Image 1 (cartoon, helix red, strand yellow):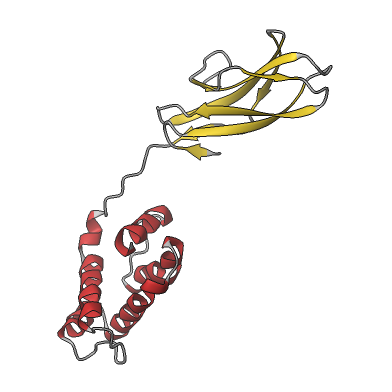
Image 2: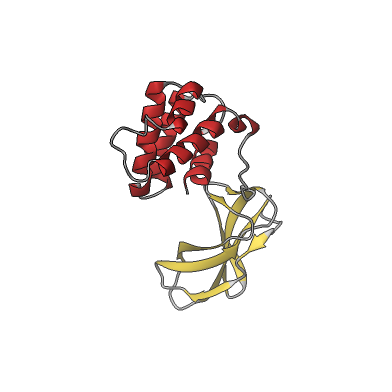
Amino acid sequence: MPQFSPGETRTAVAPITAKPSGISCEAELFLGPNDATKVASSGRIPFVSAGAAKNVSLPITMPSAPGSYHGYIDVLAEGLRFLTYILKEDVVIVSEVVFTPPPELTGILLQAYLLVEELYVAMEGDYSNWGRDLPQFKELESLISYGDAVRQISYRIQWPSLPDAEAVYNECWLAWQRDLQLYGYMTYDTAMLFATYMYQ
């Protein structure tokens, strides 16, 4: 089902057939619990029938209340309704997501992340030995493991060249999940939000 944010404005393009050509028509897209209750509407959009399918643009502002809504398109000719389309899928209005890191991320993950950041800065651009002689590496190694510490700093070195949050997720976040055993702590969507939050 298509999902939108409260108050989001979208334009649907509906191919509407009205015969014969040259008739003054109107179309209205609306959302609601049934075809008699209009929670959101495009208003009546005038068009002239073409005698065949004609694309009609129907702008609509989504409802402010989250939930699932049926969609309908009424078609009128000379002010009289002669056709109603019912959208195949409901429209879902979702609440705006404000991400706050889950409490469990204040543990080993956050500590390791902060240490990696400190180590990355302390290396001052010299990545030849992964900073293994620096105190931050020793502390990181005691928190996770030597192999994980090397992997995490190598991921951090790659981050500046990653093009977007999706790439960060694929290259870095999956490794954090695996290496720090965070499977089951969060959903994929939460992980994506966390990746964006941490690695922006």
